[in-house]
Image (cartoon, rainbow over all chains, first blue to last red; front, side, top):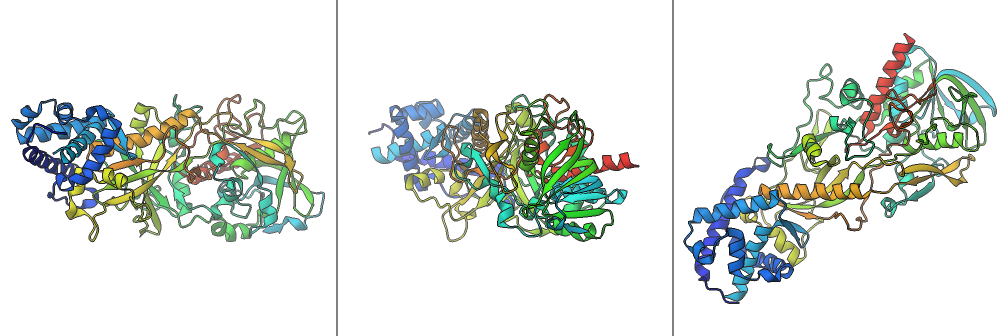
Length: 132
Length: 503
């Protein structure tokens, strides 16, 4: 599947978003007194995420569209997302995941409980890897 | 003094002040507590100092319900006929019931106790002293209670529970020397209670008949009888006493044997975390000796959250293990697809695997009258009808188990702490590892209204002046913790009441 967005630009943006997400998450709780450190990026393991994304798309084949998935997560078009600040992208993604869990917008992928937005995020990567 | 009842003359009859039937946690504690009154006590135990196949066979019965699909030995493995009773096989996990466990909760059928936790608090502290655990009785020790573990932020609906693990749990051994030397106590071994004999109108117990496996029978008459033979055996003895007679002891309103409960115990799922659990939460890691006892952590919903969500009292107990590797690629992919797991710097050395823990779900179940102990047709070696136990989960029970696990997974996700895989599902088949906890509760339930219970708030059998019952069978609801500490607290409370009466 072809997408209009330049993959490198988009992936870079999501990559940054995921790093921010990770840092934010670690800031919430320090389990066992282990000091969290930032670093790494989600999309370094994009192939793993893509597998998870594919599982989602098997359940919801009608969502096999980056445009649609971006719209559902960020409520924006791809073009608008391009012009959105990095911080805003991160905030929305993070808050949407939180809200999903709070409002039980969750589903089971291979038995694991994931938020709908997380799953869509993985699905975007699955499409990008396969489609570009 | 210890008496081998197998040497008592057949047909003999004895009189004593107090006859306590059963030398488990309840009977032993009560007997020890009233030693100082000077009243003569008979402490009657079905077994001896060692188990025997012949005594074990008396526990054989029949089971009904899916909870036993994978646990056909429930009646044999979870009970023991030996001096000290189940304290000989108990792991020693101690925690008082919580306030909510005593409350009437619309969503938990028949859940109200006629007493509150504050009624039992002083006795919990004294039970803790017997068990060698600290933090309950400040007059004995200033040691703090075990540190409640933390996994989720304080502002969430979740809280840690801290169990004590008693290393003084073998009460029979602990008390034996004192009981043996007491001038006013006779410990009868190998004495099986088979029949309660009431007076004409059933308002008083006249005598209890005992039998030995060698075929001898004798009677004990007493001012007070305390039945503490174990959660299920309490019911069986009384049901047999009423069967084929015109007696109806403890069963005026058909409550005897009903409302049986155990706690639901199953592998609930697993979690993947970027960091190891709090040391106090991980079962294996928590085996650290401190002040002579061991601590074990668990996680539960705060009581306020239980009320808000109308859910049963449940706990999650974690165990880190390498046995539960995530082998399947798709499975691993989802488990690993979490931003937090990119924190390779906090992963364990030499592995990219995040921390995986499986957790057990230990849950209260509802008390329903159809879950019950009845008598089978077959008789044991003493001529007593064997027990039949029916225990089935209700749809509400199942819904609440699934809901609890889902709520935990949501909380982990919302706070970016980890990811959860559910093993127990509402409509799914039970895991082959599912079983009861061996905590046999209900059957002679406590209720202020004789139409709704067998014993009153003081564990006195409704309508009978000299008959009390102790043990898990009096619990109207079970909570999410091991019952022994509560059983002992009830025994101490009853002993205090007895002592007041004597004085």
